Figure 1: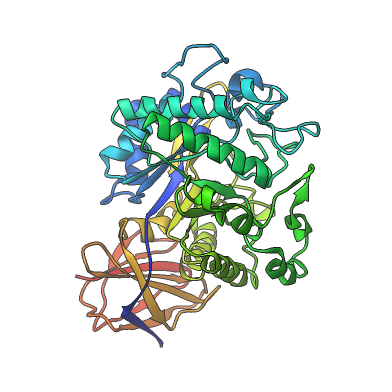
Figure 2 (figure 1 turned 90 degrees about the horizontal axis):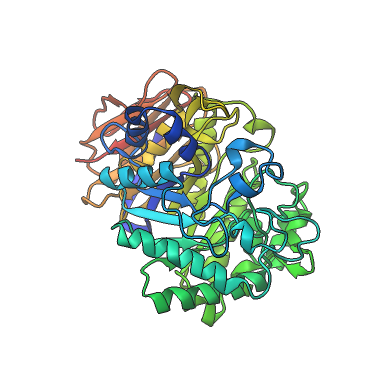
Length: 481
């Protein structure tokens, strides 16, 4: 018997959102599939009764690789349009049609948070004329002095959506600045810490002068080990193969110790939202999942006054190859969500691709679609429903509370929350093949239990006096009445 004790009197972090990005495939899907199918995809993502109930959509402001880099960006499905075709060209507000429609539908379904982000400046503003770096680019592909033009471009986009009545809450101008991006098959731009500071200050000035409401979200590190001070990272680096690169000096610049070198500068804090945004890639192996997140939490607490958002994750590496609509990927992701939320105290958790058409574990919903625009089926994954176990039942403003009896990285994982309606919610993940008998104490367990496994999807289950049995390889959410 697993006894889980909820401590309602011991609050932890306040939740902001659960979300996913509309990058890449959404624009292609919108052009290829009937409107009714596209609307059903939006329902699956955002509806609170029949879908996952995601509360955040990330909108990709493309850099124009679909025009400039049809050879440089090899994969057709990783190329993106741009609202402007050249430095003096008029804006074309019809591009990104799929993302714009999904933004409208997300709002219609009640999604509370929207974020605009870029992977690269527009190609016509970059040093090499491409939407990703090369070996000659230097510390960044945004030339010194081009920051005001990039800031004006972003501000123009934000102003347009404000005029439409669809304002973005945040603008994220930099994505994974520590990645070299010189061999990648997608849009991308590196930025040293110094480059990041320079762009942030210019963009903040532009937003303020234009009276725009979006706040700057920074800086989307691709790996959590780029955040802490080097002396605290070193013991972990020694035990993780391939992690030497996160010592972070390359291309003549510094790409590590981001919290100390960037977020702790008073003039930077004045310019940005007080949120450290980073991605959970490369740090999910057994034995390091919890320690790395504990290090992130300790770093953010050390410098004070900052929240932590996990702003992108999907499954990469050898395990990432091949679509998986089932529970293996869903439980792998759920265990990472648990660690990010319960160890790092993440206040947001965002998946990479809301919709994907490739043969990778990078989507919540999969589609069959080829370069010629031939459309086939649409397939919701169990990973979508794993996120639903959190997102459908925990709205922005929910508060995590302490819970005793949970395992940390594998086994029976559990987090407890107080939802915005004042009722308790407990999310459980059973990564083992064995049934788990569970009892909940510290709350009045008179609500409803929902279970997902290989055969069930958020299926209501019975419980008695706070006791129930979780199937092997399953998730469950208890919602108090």
